[in-house]
Amino acid sequence: MQDPSSTVGDVFDQFASLTLGSGAAAMVMGGPRPGSHQFLGGVTRAATKYHDLCVGDLDEMRTDTAALLESGLDLAEATFNDALADGWQWSNCDTYILHQVSAVHTTKLCELLSIDTSRVPLTYPDFGNIGPAAVPYTLSVTADRLSPGDRVLLMGIGSGLNCSVAELVW
Image (tube, rainbow, N blue to C red; front, side, top):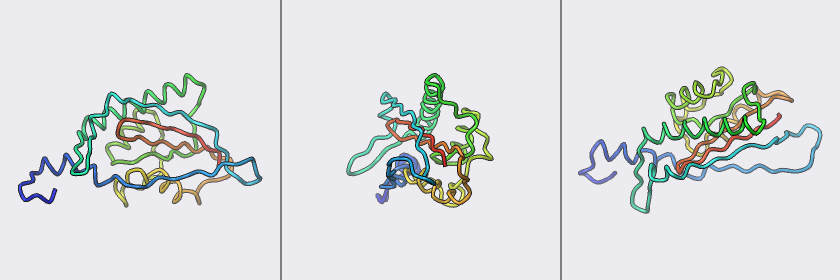
């Protein structure tokens, strides 16, 4: 993007690469202890047929952001439907910690999955798309507002495409 001949289209094609990074989180799991949070499990799905929507190498990364948005939403819906078929009931969680790309993405995801937006803590208005750090960061800044017994749903969608949803009891 530093090339003087770069166009606006070049910038948009490579913009998503600015959100990539090492924002992963780990969960230490152990036996039940008083006051600890419970990991109930989750569902992960992949739609690798969309692998060409976000392609990178050492020199650049190109992303079809519109197709990535729609395909990611389709995968999120399929993941939720698979989870329902497996017996998960996520329509009445207390808090939904979502991968937040933008207002458009978050709004569409909530509408598609019938998630009450008042139960979705937002971090993108202040921090923008913080990529893979969105879920652990949002959970960390929301933790003081959670009560013991709250059902917390975590959801991440990654380029490639992958979608993971997990439930915690706070």
